[in-house]
Length: 274
Image 1 (tube, rainbow, N blue to C red):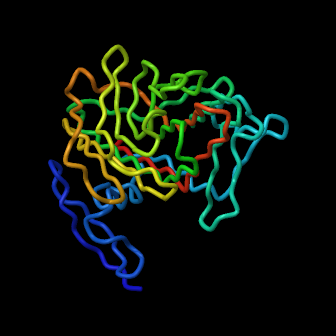
Image 2: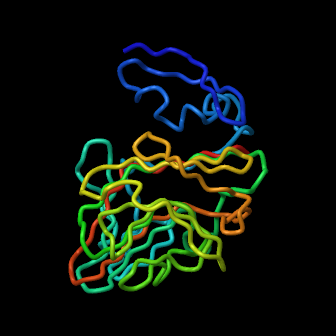
Image 3: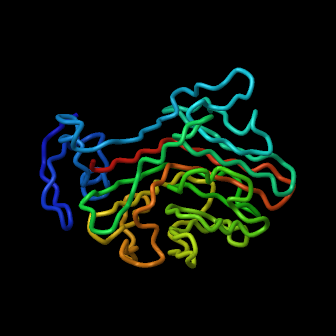
C-alpha cells in the first residue's frame, strides 16, 4: 500500500488534487473520480453534493418490502429488490417470470416525497459525475436501464413492451433493447425529441461493467465504459439533450418473455458541484 497525492488534469476546468494508491487504485487515467472535486467537498460541503449507495444494507418497509426512500413500480414489488450474499454489497433487481413483467426503482422519491437533485444544465459551470457497476444475469429478450431520469419515471411502461424503447422522458444513462439484449448502449433523451444513443458501447455477457459519464460544466458529456472514454460525446447544448431538467437515479428492467430477468448493482455514485 502506498497512497500519494497527485494532480489530475480536468478538461475545461484546470487541475484537481487527488489521492491514488499504488496497490488499490485503478490504473491512472481510468477513473472519472480523478476529475471530481472530492477533496474540496470533504473540506467544505458548499463545494458539491453526492448520492452514494453501496448496498451493504437495505432498509425496507416490513409489509411492502420497499425502501422508504425509493419510488418502486413492479409487477412483483415484494420480491423485486433483494440484497445478495456477495462481497462488497450487491442489490438484485428482478421483474418476475410472466411476459412483460417489469420493475423500476428511482431513488429520492418515497410516499409524498419528491426529490430530483441532479441537473445537467448547459454552460452552468456545475460539473456532474455518474458511475454505476452493474451485471445483467440474463441475456435474451429483455431490456435494462440505469442512469438518471426526471421525477416519477418509476412507473408502468417506462420501457415499452417488447422493444425496451424508453418512454418520452428526460433521461441519460445506459440501456439494452429487447431486440439487441447483448449490447449495452449509452443513451439520452429530451422529452419530445428523438432518443439519442451510442450503440454497442459494451457487450452484455453476464459480466460486470462499470458505466460512467461526466459533464464538464460547459457543453460536453463524456461516457466511460470500464474506465475507457468513448470517442462519441453528447452535447448539452443540443435540442435532444435533457438540459436544465432535474433528475434522480433510476434502475429499470423488463422481460419480453415468460422468463425471470435479473440485474445486479454493486454501487451507484453521483457527484455534482453545488
